[in-house]
Structures are given as C-alpha cells and as structure tokens.
Length: 264
Image 1 (tube, rainbow, N blue to C red):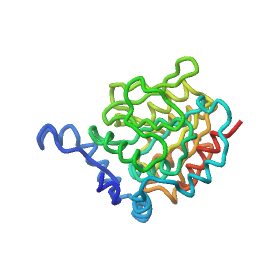
Image 2: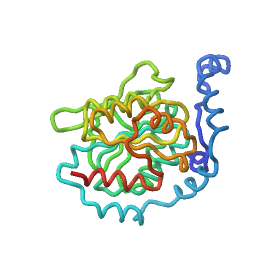
Image 3: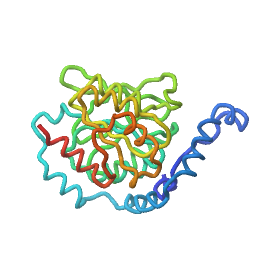
Image 4: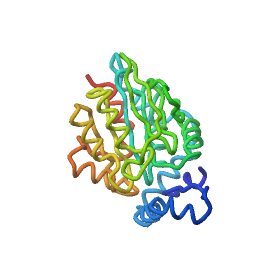
C-alpha cells in the first residue's frame, strides 16, 4: 500500500506456485503489468499520490459537492466504477472528496487477491464515506463503497427496492477477475437508468462493452479524460465504442457523482 501511495502504477502478487508455475500461470498478467508501467503517464501519477496522503477529515471539495442536495430516494441510485492501472490513486482522489450523502458505490479495481482488503481499509481511513471489501450479499447503501475482492467477480443485484452485491467465482473476462465488464453488465440489468457508470484509467478494454450496455439501458456514463489518466486505454476504448455519455477530468468526478445524486 505504501508503494501504491507513493506512485506505483501496478501491483503483482508474489508467486504461489514457484517461479516456473508463476511464469506459466501469470505470464500474461506480468507482461500486461510491465506494458502498463511503460505506458504510464508518470506526470499524472505523482500529483495524485501526493494528494492521497492527506489524512481523513473535512475537504474543500467534499464541502462543495455536499451543497448539491440529493433527491429523495437516493438509495435507488447507484454508482459503478471500474479501474485498472493508475486506478488506486484515482479512487483515492474520488472517494476522499465524497460526502456521507453520496449514493452507494460498487467498484472493480484490477488487483490481486489479498491486496483489496488492505486497499479498502486505506481508503476508509482517507474518506468520509465507509469503504470496505465487498462480501457476498452486502447491501449497497448511501455513503458506502464496496470494492471487489481480488480474484472474484462483483455483480450488482436488486431485490425489490434494495441493491446488494454478489461476489462470485467464474472464468476470467477480458483476462481479468474481477472484471469491470461483469460489474457494468450487472449494473445495466439491476439498475438501468438509476445507475451511473464511470470508467477510469487503465490499459486494455475491460469495461468498454459493459459501459455501452449501461448507457443503452438508460444509465448515465462517464469516461475519465486523457489528460488526467495514467494510462488512457480503457476510457479511450469506451469512448470509441460510444459508451461514454460524458468525458470528464479526474478532479471533477466526485462532483459529477453528487450531480447524479441530486438529479431528477
């Protein structure tokens, strides 16, 4: 977590099967991580890393977005976020600026097993909202963010007027587990127009198809802009496929979430 906070753009777990087994099973992941690091816009990493070290407490941005009064029934609104390379820093920037009145959030960040619990714990100390690693059947509530555990898919489900999450095993999708596409497609089905989908910095195309499905289902959708991305891969592909209703800078995304919460 210290390395990520200092600006590391990717993380890979230690080999569990010995070096030979690791290279056989994790070669594509390792190659992808190296390519992502080589393409990273380090000028974007370092400013965000410095900002993320601010301790938990009131923030100017949090006060500003809190001025947007959430409409009655905010609990029916949900935000789905997907990220990869550079996403750890981006999520810190967004979540640290959200007030308690924010809609519930469900998040996929490409990260190995055993890292996500510590990552969620760190975000919880930096944020006014509750942040935790998702567990099966966790309710999605205003002022709470649920992060997919490493090595498991995260799906949004609806039971009556309530949202909850399913944490599931399954094959990798777009070479990833958890996969952003899996989350976004489930959000399209469960929430439709009551959802906001946000695709953040990352290499590849995971989430691009799912964001388009969300938009087609009536959801609001946002892609992070190139200027503020560490790697402009996933957002670029989402824009190319027509899935992004808006393109916004990282610094404005917390405000965008609260605008969505206060919409009619």
